[in-house]
Image (cartoon, rainbow, N blue to C red; front, side):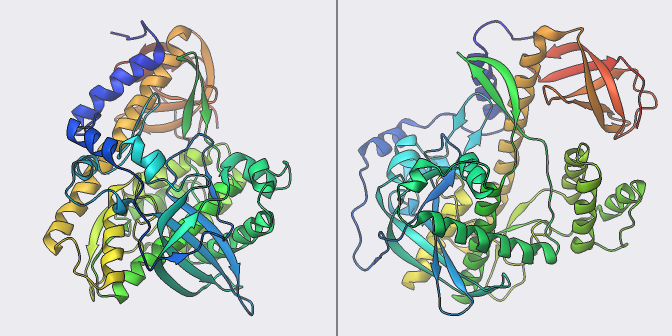
Length: 492
């Protein structure tokens, strides 16, 4: 069954629902959760919260994002240091532990973003409205205060609760163009006096923080991710997701905020749910990959040496760098959640080159972040943690498992979308590059549209990195299969 009869979006939505269920995820909210969300209203302001609404806060996200988890602002300090403040939506104010909405979030543990439909962790009445740091709305928040030295070091930090107001809802692409000085100032940015200078200060702090992490071995990876382009529910293209200056800004601030959160909980004697990527067990294979490209790596895992190798390869061969990045990501191993108990030593995050790291900055989209928010509020109030050590251990394993399931759903539906896009082009030839060659099969990524498929004939002698011309011979939308045979000789 090829599954191409009917509107493309509807077909992909059906596939997404099926794969969600197959992977142990719930695509739909239970009636009790829907009823709870419908009856909620904006939480009343609590007494004693700091009032930070007058600061020029802004959000930067995708153009169409409404589930805004965080906003940020810079603040000058005497001397050569400054502060960046990251405010995180107080989701726990409306989603209480053990409620029907919380039960659904606990099952899925994450929003699932497929090619045709988003399956939010929380009902949209919450995530895109009541618990979103929405444009020009007063909202309760957890504020993470980060002092940044001129050298990019963390120069003091604090965590507290406050009321905040998002003064400008901004988008990645337009902000990046403005920051890089090849695009106009976004209208929402221009409308807030002083926000332009404030945002440039945030960018400077973010770059300083990033530089320090890179000096310690943070890995600069670039995998190929795409999003579908629909016209009237018919898929017309796949557009690569490009990194840019604004995305880097937010990433750098979130990494710093997550580190501050982890250390704050440790200092308060409260357990935390850490996000870790362990020292890679397959380092020997990473060494082999680098040696094949003429670059020696040390025999023992060394994040700084790997980071330097990746920087050089990006400059030397940008075309093949996404595929090298994907190889390294697979060899590093998947991230996981573990419990960090006070006084104990959990593994760090090898890829980010940070020792203390939790997930705290996206409680509308990730359940571990909501867990962390509840732990933070307990630490701030001096109350008992809302989860026992045993419960946290079970949740860490469950969140790891469900995040893996969600990733597989997103990949499966993405493959089905790619097969659907190419379904009418059987017999056509494409230029591409070999991305994988082993006993399990040979894989090719064609350049346009940017999709990957299996080379089922003519793969003898093809090796990773070879440029090839292939012919499409078969697609299977239901299973997300794309099959090619060789149409031209392989070459380096």
